[in-house]
Amino acid sequence: MCPITGSASLRWIDAEGRVCPSLWEPVPLPGRHTHALGDEVLEHAWTALAKRGFACARGAYWQPHTHTATTTPDAERPERACLAIEPTRAYLELQARRFGPSPQLPTTPGVTFKTTQPGQWWATIADGRTFLLTWAPHLNGDLWCVWGGPQHSELIRSTTVMDKALFVLRHPSHART
Image (tube, rainbow, N blue to C red; front, top):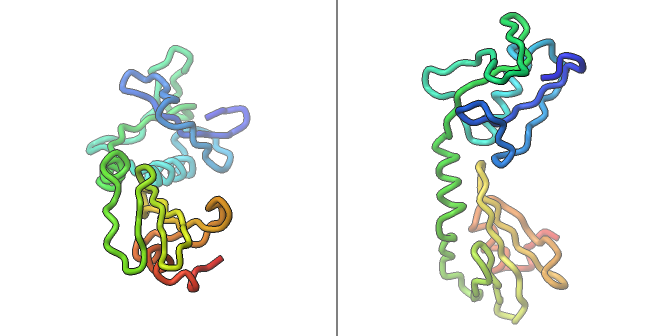
């Protein structure tokens, strides 16, 4: 956190205390804070960690971070705090979906599918129209989208449930546009 402005951000560091910008960008934490171990800033940090699929490692707790040479330790008002974290089951499952095979589409009456790339299928319906069905894994529910219109640039339907996307392809008149 910056003691002059009171702004804080969650940064990702490795076991040696080096900032790891290759993991994720720093996450700005809302509000103005007096030190890194304040209740409000820690609550915002917990929320940011949970949204990204991480939890506190067993036996770990927030503590002043004094690993870098530029940090002056201040036990009462530290500018930095650290916590050992570990991925949640949901995060590990997300990575398995992200880097594993794409979902298998069930046989859908009146619709034929052709894979264009992982997570994308051309869907041709009975009247000859084509749609683009896309899938993207997310931590809190994968995203299924049906695209139509010129160059398949119009979002017809987005949902976290594959069956709802397939319903739109079986019955395009029910699509929300």
